[in-house]
Length: 413
Image 1 (cartoon, rainbow, N blue to C red):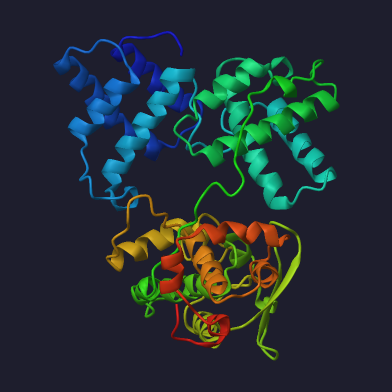
Image 2 (image 1 turned 90 degrees about the horizontal axis):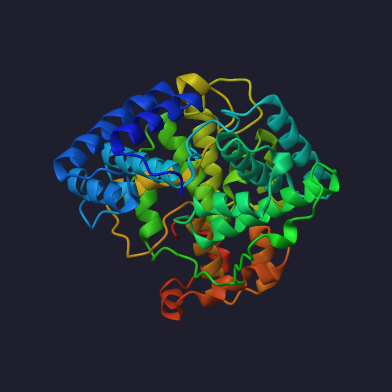
């Protein structure tokens, strides 16, 4: 916890910090009225100091949302208010702003160079490219934190790591475990390269992510069909999104692998999709379902911009016209979940990965051997599929599906 400030002074410092670390003008403009509302509400309530509890009291009073709505159903104004308060909480707890900036915002050349060397160190130890990107992103966030508390990487101790992790208290256990694992690797890198004199890895807190602790979320029969039915296939973007969601549902490919599909990834003669997985760097070859093939053809012929790109799926926005898709599928899927008017149970996940989970669970219920499911999903080990055994048996019974149908029947989901 940093020195407690009275709210007018705290909010001025907060807005100045936003500008200092490079937040965009649009985000600054959207957060400023929320900060002003907080100051006004505090004056009305006689609250002198910023606290996390008071900030959430403010949110519930000034920007309430209906309890039955899930976060992806909130309005942009409601989302912005909660993001602003989350950012103010970070600032109050650590004196640093850690979210929603560009990866290198507020970092000097030395910090950026050190992070690049860390990425090369990970590569030399055999980490996959996606793992390197993920760990580097976490370390960049940590470096921004160090810059804002005026601590050099050469001087870090376990105390700075614990202080940083405390700002992530509301993150999931898996996210915190991933952050701790990445920071342990970074500390090991610093020691190996003689950047720090003491091996501090053993001083870090223990992060216990129990194996198979999470129960995966799967869609009920027919709901994936409803999502696909909500897509406007008469528009170029709709044709693209339909093909993407269909590939995820039918083949279980990861987001990065769908983004990475190239024109020559489709073997039309032999009706197969062949690519190299970004997470494992292993090749994978899957049958091309008829409906998936026609969806790709429809997009290539009637939706995809006429651009010189090797990738099947490209951006349609003016700023990134014709470039390889980036970002996240979850926003796309959330849009069509809303349009399909699906109601979600408490705690049900609704990201694009749930389509992959659903495919695995149905294959499992159809008594497909774990090694076969592992091969379909591109897992390096059949053990990685065991988590699907924990899905509710009755749910699996409702979702029963012949595995051959997953690839051949255009009407099943």
